[in-house]
Length: 73
Image (cartoon, rainbow, N blue to C red; front, side, top):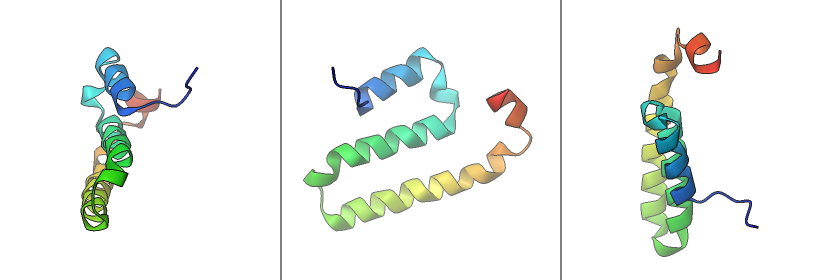
């Protein structure tokens, strides 16, 4: 049995657990999709996509403030 999760399984998990409202899960999905596409895109396109995902992830910093109990509680 394949224990690795692919982007399709991750997307299904996000949908089934109402994860669409959890931006860190959407970021994880974007990273998984990029990982799967890596061998089919240029190094420049890969780097640009990774920088974009990183920027979005860094913008979550302020989003977390005050939500720790709700998110992790």
